[in-house]
Image (cartoon, rainbow, N blue to C red; front, side, top):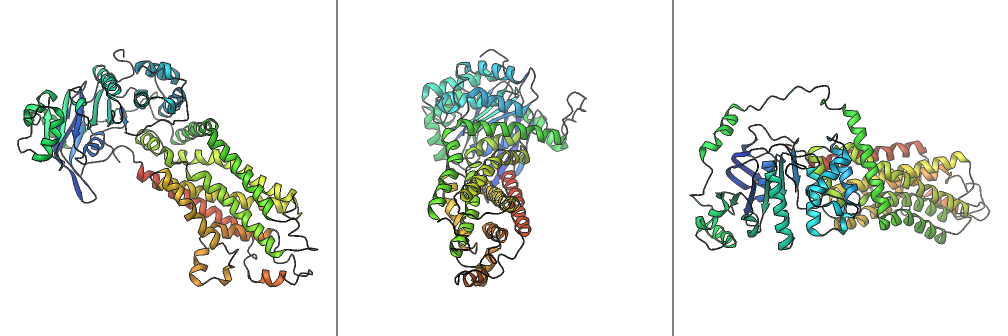
Length: 563
């Protein structure tokens, strides 16, 4: 890799002074002090549970320490000029590599020389030019690791933090990746990584070895590691540290090297920010939000278009469900001459549930599958509002198509009665709002779970209450108090009642020949007496509430650096 390509002009001196970190009542790090010098590769090593990733997060400023301080060049950690590569891939596997990098660069922009130049420069720097048009999911493990690093090099970071970058790679790929990181350091970027691989240690300039209780067991030149613990190989160091615990005479950096940082901590001062010029002044908040929304919406749309299975499910599932509805209900259920009051009520319920099901399933897998990407982008540039808005922008038109298709096919096949355009406009409004509320609930669930399997398990748990407490099978007036109370929280209830009011379900057979109609519909009490506007207001309120909760969950799970 050519020196200076894709990296910062000079690295950042990272110093930790007396850092401790407590998580869930357990102290993970204890009084850790170290320095990672600019232009070097520093490795944080140790056994499982020793606090390597926690220390990396603390050094990067992702999480503040419980005690002690971290300084970058004597000042507080700043997300600007920082690169962070987690263990998980931070690129969408369905997109070609160059496309993924263009979206990442556009989000982080403006970039010197433009997006295309930054992408070409970074691909060349990491030896990935030949992979530019290949789908990320088709890359080898080593190529995907380098691709994740490429995302961070787009903006020429001064310091790069990597969590287990060689994990899962074969020895040759791991050695190649470590050589790339050494070249980055020589070109001017400070590199700090965690590792559990003994072979990685000798490829670094400095090793920070943590004991099982989170204390420093060794800090210094990797070539002195074996002698310090009296073992024959680097692999034996892990067993020696586990057996000895924290070493009382652990090697530390000379106190002189930490004096500037300690002085800065005592003064609690950081370099004063430079006044923004007319050129580098941040764009207005609204403009930045709109710009992010536009980029994210385009990325989501391309993801759907390139994932054939996902696209087929989004378009095909409404077709299958509409076909099943057509086979389930007989024509003429609303015909006064041959009425079927129970069938009419069930048709309206399943229409309401169809809108709910479409929205829920569309949203349920949207966030959990890309949470590592969201978490990484959130550290520096991503704003939660535009991210969630982009999901709605792409998915709502597809939901609208599904809802229109549902109503149109059922009407064409005489499963719904003839009515004015105004009535069908009201039916469609109800269905769209029900779908939007369900989409918001799906996004909230997707943001809250940790993996795709959990999101899939949540589908029946979210659907069953909507079926049982909607008031279709057991009318709301006939429910016990607890069931009646729960029904108020069911969006399907409000959609069902609004649809029934639109088609005047209580009065449709009030004077007809059916002896069954009035008694059956009377069991619903005043359920269909509420105007559709009430249902619309409740559905809108639920959608807003779920969206706000989604934003809150994402903000908590994906904090900004220093947050």
